[in-house]
Image (cartoon, rainbow, N blue to C red; front, side, top):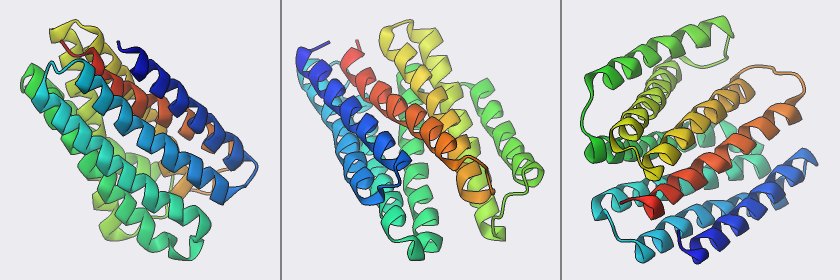
Length: 229
């Protein structure tokens, strides 16, 4: 992998650590700025990685769109931290942007490896799992948003399963890092759902776990472009 990609990844990690540290200190605005810079770093790693190793243009384009929609989602959810009055509007909108991001990733994984029925079934089961989780954890979610969240979680699980298929069929570093990144994203968004919709205790701990899995997930996804053969 290109030294420039490695350098950009290190800078992105530095901004991610800054965001986590500032969020733990309840410095929402400064944390939001670091989060934006880290999100920009994801896109930069993918773009530079493709420039140094233009192995699969279609995969790069899809992943780049995924990262850009994630960037927009980060902006919306970041604004929520400094303007909590608009939380009711920003959370669903940010969720929608991340849903589109996951769909682009899913398309990239399927296009690279192939469509797999088992992965689809796992994703459908994920929708049911989400519905159970909402009920078990007594999440405070409105009727329509429950459907959106169930579809979102099912898509996230389908994405992880498709990444697993890609890792098995390709047997390359790109497939492996994409799969690990997808699993980390699943963990991150599970924590985020509990943070947003349940009265969790020790909120700072959950925020730390959520961000500590989210940033590596996005970095690994971006790095999969540079590692593609």
